[in-house]
Amino acid sequence: NNNNNNNNNNNNNNNNNNNNGNNSNDNNNNNDNNEQLFHYLTNDNYIKNLIQKCSLSSYSMKIINKCIKQYQTILIQYYNEIINLKNNIKLILDYHKDDFKLMMNIIDELKRQQPQQPQPSPPQQQLPPPEQQSKQQQQQ
Image (tube, rainbow, N blue to C red; front, top):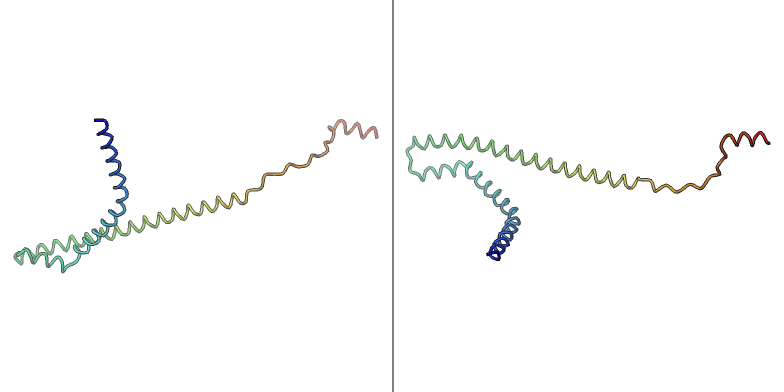
């Protein structure tokens, strides 16, 4: 039983790793599908062709067309808002990257400008304390 559980855990881990690698592909596919769906839903000819295939009365078609127009307008507004948000996020990320690069350049420049370790100064002749100096001067 323990061996079976371990094998199952390993299989699950492998599946998770495989799924992680596919996330970017899935995102690209989702984006493509969303773009295609948006195109279809906002394409008047496509919608008209679909409705005509349904054999509806002209009154029903008129009502459906009116509703679809309203939904298309809303869809376009949301779509444009989403595009703007994506662009804003991209700009923010670009700014953060630029800020990070700038900070790294500043750090590098500060490292270059740091003074070398101070060299030990040569020993200087020490003068006697002031009391002894005055006595020496009096003796001279």
